[in-house]
Length: 240
Image (tube, rainbow, N blue to C red):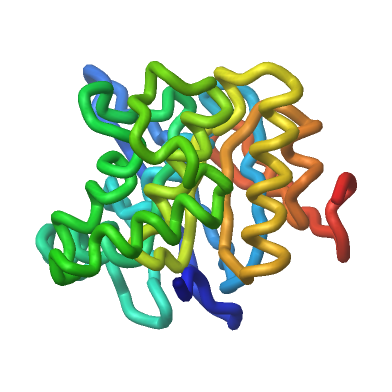
């Protein structure tokens, strides 16, 4: 299964603000963000609570719209897209991985991975084959017919990653993906992300408060009080 492509200029923020009404005093969750993420990058978003990390991730995933500024997806102004067009973009081009896995307990591992395909443009006869291939990529074919409560937390997060990959997403967004895992499972998950990025060219953006997790990424964005205060990168991540 062709999962990701390498290249450049995947998503660009230009002077992006997100403001929420809060009584008489509006709150600027993020302020004047300008940065770009290229295809094939591995980026960690860091900062204290309330710094704007999660808001930025929601904007990157087009789960929310900016109050001011523009967000471009592969050169096109996504801020102008309709809600239906944004839903198609999220389904076909962006995979989401959450701290709490968000798996459906009554479905098998295989059925959980198939789920995003039911809402996209893929033909039903393709669903099972794509789901098997995604499970192969994360090393969980043998667990396909188990339910989430029958496998470990680390394996559940691998299922969530397979689900994010199954549509051929160009970018995976992960919100504290190791937050509910022990240190061994956390390392296994980060090794998997590193493999997907390094060997398959998959663009990965993750939010974390853990410097050890962030050190797997090749680039770190540091937020404070809704602003991007540092953007550092290295030729090779600190661990892999």
